[in-house]
Image (cartoon, rainbow, N blue to C red):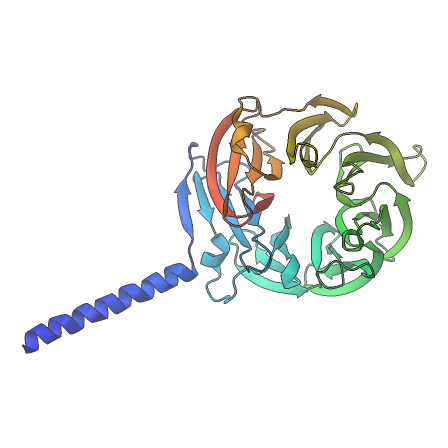
Length: 386
């Protein structure tokens, strides 16, 4: 009888230990999935971080990692590398970038910018910034756009701001007011160009790009562009490509090109308006890859386009860079980037916005190579090269 009790007690101890392990696994549900690509220890870049937004209010922002050298997809690497962080990454991942040796993730509804070691994804610290949106870098500083006010539709929502953060001390050093609800920004020379949306004040959207001089951190100009601006990217010729989301009803999405008035001028102005809807874009060399998702009221469905524009001629080269028909597998495209060495094109699919998404990889001819399950709402990608 005593022997039976001892065996039962031992079994209960083992069960308790296994249950404890399961609980740890639930807290840190990191998964490693082999990818159908050759192992290449010298691959450049070494990998790619993918920030999953997570549905607002769910506290499910997460970071995945594509390991090009070991041919693995790592799901939720942040949780594994930072088990001591109780709430993990936070609520709504809005941007991810690398500057120097650090990885920066802007977590919108958690009102912070998370800072990690780019090689290990180990947490270094955070910078508290209200309703933060996107980040870019220049001369040892991070510049973060902020809606400033609470996350809410409000016709009286305040002006937004750009916060300057010292990348060594991780402290906010200065801030400057810009337009309403500023989204993406770009650095060109000594200036920041900030796309103001005015999204909280709909239908009274903002329609300007703020120009901020970085030395004095002062807004020196607001360039009239188009309503409800979102993306802004710089090509290698110095032109800025800016997207307008329109009003989702009567005014369609468009793509604007900003350039200098002449060779001797520093002032930018709208030089071209392209009647091409654009939700997200990525510039690689002379090619601007983009996709658009526009709601068609008459058909009561989304119209989706995957295109390439030549940034030199500003001409549309194709409106279907996925060439093998597999775009039918994508429900809602939500992110795009292009491998700088292989030319592979990566497109994410948010699907229903509340469950796992998918990352699709296409070769430079637009043929699907592989797909892999991601976290919820995969959106933002950045390449890592040690």
